[in-house]
Image 1 (cartoon, rainbow, N blue to C red):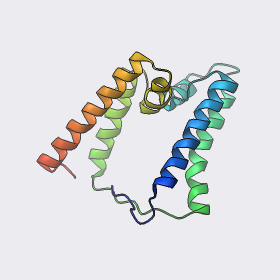
Image 2: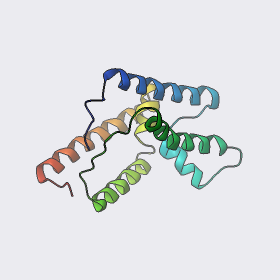
Image 3: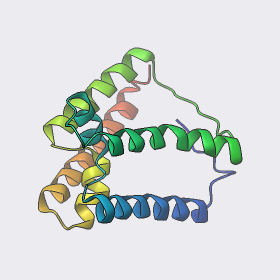
Length: 145
C-alpha cells in the first residue's frame, strides 16, 4: 500500500485525528462507552436488548464515512502489494490478536491510552513491536504475495 503524498498534508491528518478524538469523546460522554471497534462489532454478534441501536449506528457511520469522503473530496489511489491469501491470513491474525488482547488498536490506542490504562499501554507497545518485526520480516524475505 502506498501513500498519496501529493494529497497528504499535516493539516488533513491533524483534522482527521481531531475528528476521531472528538467522536471518541462524544461516545464516552454521551453514552459512557469506549469506541473500541472490535468490541462494538463483536457485541453485535451477541446483541443485548437496548444496547444495539448505537452500535449499529456506529458501524453504519464507519461504512458511510469513506463514501462521503470520496464523494466530497477525492478517490485515493489504493495499491495493495499482497496476495489474497496473505490478506486473509493477515486478517485472521488481526482478529485473533484483537481477541487475545481484549481489544483492537482503536480501543487500546485511542481510548485506553488517553485514559492512561496500563493494560492499553502494554497492548499498544506489543502491537507496535509485532508490527515492526512483521515489516522487517516481510521486507527481508520479500513476502509480498
